[in-house]
Length: 211
Image (cartoon, rainbow, N blue to C red; front, side):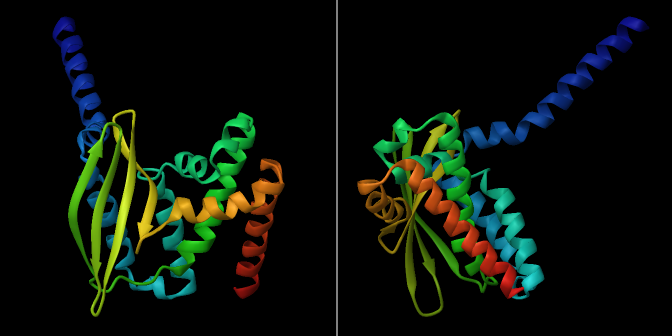
């Protein structure tokens, strides 16, 4: 009896482990396009909430999107590529602070512009994969215009993560790299971090003032 009971416990533990591991295994098996489809599907589901049109609702939804971002975006890769070679000279702590501050800057700059979803269609055109890098090409079909939005991804630990978004031919990474290069041409990465923190503080202050 004890032997059977022990066996049942072992089987139950194995089944439970398998169930708990299913999400991560599925993510590891997803293609770049499937990863983008899943992310966009979740975003659309969130943005269908009409409360996004209110200040309180928008703040709540922004927090949901921010929490979800780590599942699909690699902010360290994004920051590293935006900074370029000076990144290699930074300490681990400096890199960590820069990633945190840059992420916050992106949230304050872009997430505040979200609005309710209005049935725009996303067309997944094709994907290009080369080793651990990939690009997924999409079009967003609005009522009277088509917007090109492409995603660059990198494979880390068996899963695809976005590290750059190219909207209408404008790369997020290259846009910030150009800005960062202007600062780094005459200053240090410490000065870059200081300026980003100041910009974040200014945006947060403006946000509080508007509430």
